[in-house]
Image (cartoon, rainbow, N blue to C red; front, side, top):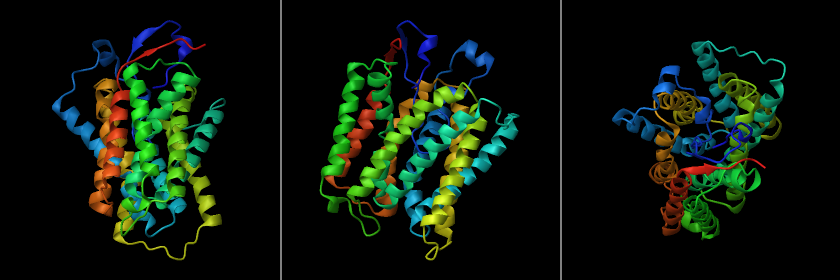
Length: 343
């Protein structure tokens, strides 16, 4: 969603760039440039293959909270975050080599790398801790509120966007869903495996806010350093910091490395950060960001569904209604917007 207002001083119609709907190592869509021939020809109509791959990305993103819950049954949350983003950094190293992109941090690039690493450390740290203290369904819904934080901050704080009436309604519908989720009887969301807590939900809400702030900060960072090395070093430095916190504060005694745990770590670290990244790049080099973003509303729906199927989350009427509100809010906020000049 972030744009550079200094380059566009007049009001012009624009389509909101979708925000990548998960806590992954992916760049925002605008960081993925199409080829020059595709840029001249314009985006192609979304094909059946494009639809299938977009839905696949959405399903895989929806499974991140489930994988985190499974892994934290056996290993501490900050240690899990360390392994996740070390794996993501390894993938991004291979990606940069494949693309022929230098990973050297040049003078003037350290500041955005450090800033983005700090954002990643706090956002993923709160996500992992909050997920461990709540349920998969609550984690999915609360973290995906970052879309609304981005829209609200860019509209009312930075004043780089003008929300339409429909998008404003979307913000309030989603906010109602979050309030409903956090205010209803916590026993309705409890399962034999996980139970939501007020602390866990508050931490997850903070993670959603941090994810929104990190998304906004990505655009100016990408003016100083390419997406590949930025994501690589952001993941690496954040993983080192998470590892240090884990070593200082977490108990490694009850750790169990069974098949489920290893699979969950590999899923979160490589499948989401690897397969989803590759698919997203492929899609955004062929189709417009607005075409691909249409499917982002389904992320919390798939997340809740996977939580019910895999973790046994109870699909209470309140949880169902909250999920519908958040998904509807994402769909409305991803409607076209008009951009205004920065003041």
